[in-house]
Length: 280
Ligand code: ATP
Ligand code: ATP
Ligand code: MG
Ligand code: MG
Ligand code: MG
Ligand code: MG
Ligand code: MG
Figure 1 (cartoon, protein in one colour):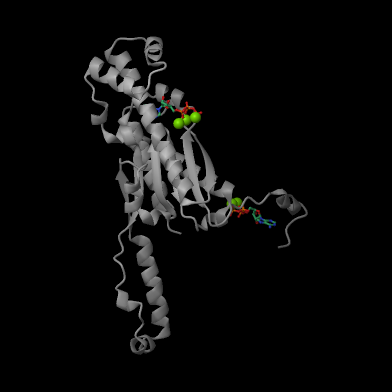
Figure 2 (cartoon, rainbow, N blue to C red; figure 1 turned 90 degrees about the vertical axis):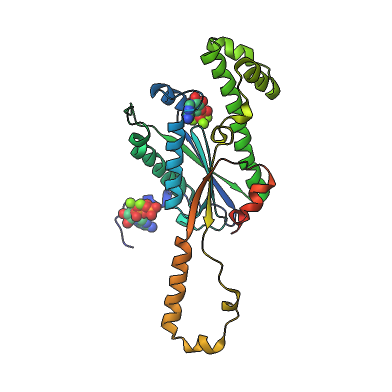
């Protein structure tokens, strides 16, 4: 490539290729959403519309990027697990982080009016993004367990806090003071004896967060197709063999489905059921 005499500046760009054969987790988080949620009148402790909008943006990302097999969302954040072997943008970090964060943000804004028909956007929201690499399944599981444990801790606190304020007539300062130093059991007790709220009966969407899993809906190929019958194989013209394979590949790519769950992702059950998420 000839280029101008100025083209040498391109060489100052540093490569930022991410380590191969490593799980990638992309986490996005709303920038200053404490303020954003205030200014847009989010219901406390959990605004359902806002959570559903986050879910919508996350699903759009998974529809666009097939290498994302799993996503977990709570509050103003979402984490996405990319396949270990993903070759997305040749694994260039800045390219992946910026493109996916940008798409998520524009989906959030694009779909805003569907979820908040009566609340005009006051200003353009933004999200930060980062990628963390994890070498093995252990860390990936612990990562998602860490986020879901965080959901639990925050939601229990916020539920107790807003019960004290909204139903108990406490000021926010008083509510913070009451909850200071309490353990999980105390908060359950405050909710139950003070407000007849059984925390465990609260919608699992709030207690567990949102889990999107990509499930493969392609039926397994019949086993005998693998033990090639040489007669029929040689009888089939080379071209159609090739296009047949392409056709199959295309079908395989299309035949996945994205499911929204609000389930536990800390225990083995989830990972046993969706073991394919950890495959290459
Ligand atoms: P991408 O956008 O695919 O992530 P990029 O930003 O490097 O990669 P482009 O946006 O397509 O590539 O190109 C930016 C500009 O830089 C273009 O005008 C392109 O011709 C020029 N360019 C790209 N690579 C080189 C290079 N190695 N030497 C000189 N100019 C280049
Ligand atoms: P930062 O820019 O550092 O992320 P932040 O203000 O966004 O700052 P977070 O720790 O990310 O801080 O917390 C997000 C805040 O947004 C929550 O504390 C909560 O007040 C608010 N929020 C986000 N989603 C919802 C929701 N669905 N319902 C109610 N409040 C929400
Ligand atoms: Mg933060
Ligand atoms: Mg935030
Ligand atoms: Mg956050
Ligand atoms: Mg470009
Ligand atoms: Mg360009």
